[in-house]
Amino acid sequence: MIKRPVSIKKGDVIGITAPSFGAATEPYSTMIDVSLDKIKERGYKILEGKTARLGDGIGISTDPKVAASELMEFYKRDDINAIISAGGGELMNETITHVDFIELGKYPPKWFMGYSDNTNFIFPLVTMTGVMGIYGPCISGFAKKWEGTEEDSFALLEGTKTSFSGYEKVAFETDDEDDQVPPKADYYYDCTYEYNADKELVIYDFVGSDVKKLSKDAEVSFEGILLGGCLDVLANLVGTRFDNMKSFNEKNQDVIWVLEACDLTPMSYRRALWNLREAGWFTNAKGFVIGRPRAAFSQNMMGVDQYNAATEILKDFNVPIIMDADIGHIDPMLPVVMGANAKVSTRNNNLFVDYLSL
Image (cartoon, one colour):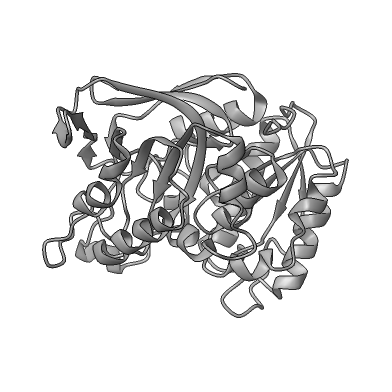
C-alpha cells in the first residue's frame, strides 16, 4: 500500500531545499522571492533551507552530502508539512547516493513536489519508501501569474480536488532574434505562459494485433498506479540500488507509466525506453501517458522521431499510448501524483486524470 501524505492547510510550513540546482543565479534568485511571497499570501509559512540559494557545488547546488542531509532533515522534521524543491538540474543522482529511503519510511509521509531531475527522489520515494510524491513545478514555477498548473499543484497539496484535466494551449520555446536579449525580470512573474500553439493529443491503441494512431478526439481509458517522471533520469537508475521495480511490480499489478524527456534526442529517447523495457520495468503496464519531449519534439534522426521512438518499443505491451500530453518540460504542465491509483482517459482532444486513492 503506497501511503498518501496528509494534505496541507493554511498556517502550515512549506520547506524549500535544493537537492539539485539552487536558486543561485538570475532569474531564479528573483523568482524564488516572488514565489515565496505568493505562497505566503496564500496563508503558508516558509522555511527556507541553507541550500535553497546555493551554487557552490560542481553541477549542483552544493556538496551532494550537504544537499542530501538537508533533504533528509526536512523530510523528518515534524515542523515542516511539505517540501517544494528549489529547482531541477542535472546531478541529483549524486544527492540520492546519500539518501536513506528506507529510513524515510519510518517517518510520517510528507508531500514532496518537484520535477525533472527531482525524479531522482520522487521515483524511489514511491517504489522504495512507499510514499506518494507530486511531479510538479519547482519553487520558481510559482513566480508567474498563477494559471491551471499552479492552481492544480496546490489543489493536490491541499487535497481539494481529485479530478484533473489537461490544458488548451501549448507554450513552445521560440528561436526569435529577440530571444537573444535577456528579458526584464518582471517578465518571469508578471506574465502567463506565452501560448503559441493549440494542443493536440497523439493517441495510439491496438486495433486487432496492430498499433494504430487514433483520432485526437478518440476515447481511451485505463486504471492503475501512476509512476514515472523524467526519462533522462529513469534510464540512469536502471540496475542501481535505487531500482526496486522487480519488487514493486510483484506488489502492484496495474501500472500507468507517466513519462517525459528533457535533453534526449529521438535516438537516445528510443534507447532509454528500450532500457526500461528490457529491465522489466514495464511488465505490468496498463497504459502510457507521455509528455511533449523538450529536445526531441518535431525532430527526426534517420527516420526516428518522438512517436515511433515510443510506439516501436512499447507496442508489444498491447496497451494505449497517449502522447504529447501536458506532462513535463514544455508548458503547461499538469502536476501528477506519482504512486496514486487513478483512472486516465481521453476524449475530445483532452487528457483526464481521476484519482481513486486521494
